[in-house]
Length: 298
Image (spheres, rainbow, N blue to C red):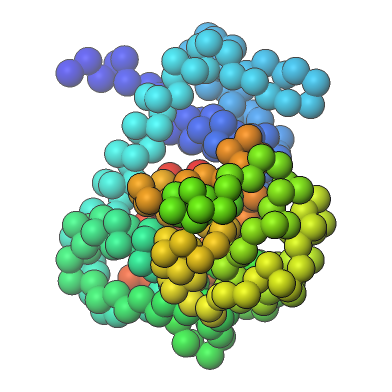
């Protein structure tokens, strides 16, 4: 090997990748716990090392140059490899074992988490994972769970919270329902359709009406506190439902309603108790979930 040619600085590459993924220097700096000037210097140093321009500033936005686009896939591959090495080494050197409890919504628990747990099993086969599928917010302070995946940021000061990404959701309905009741052509048409509710229908109606719809409680005649049950109701043809695109994409019997409409975005927060700093097993699971959800839910 020609070691003289290997002079790539990973911290600079990581700063570049975080800027691309987060969309701005300020957002990337927050994710890496750096100041914005420090992160900017790392990106500039990478450009100087490679003798290329990676970003162009257009107005207030950063836009990747062609050189940046060509570099991006390679840096993403480096990140994935570095993460695998780190987690695998930790599992081997510390023989990570013990139980970690993860709480997430029933839909997230059923449709998204299993793939992440398969990855975790490869890295730390001795780990025991208990998934608490619950749509209420479990109290991490009382140790009802070790890690939570939530759509709201926790307010408790002794919890660690990381915004992973924004997921996207849309209206979906079964093809049988739409064949029978017609396919809405506009948001106004939705007021003539049945919806499947899960959770607080009044709050959902208020939120949707603020987005330009005109719905009332009469539109929500069927529902369940369980997201899984509500989803199956929709698949049975009882009405429209709001669902994550990442879940709905695998349901061939469901159809995206109003596909030209802008998706509804929802934040995905990963939260843990401050024991995260001292418990290696919780740290391993937290970091793996952060990487997985960032990749899977975007």
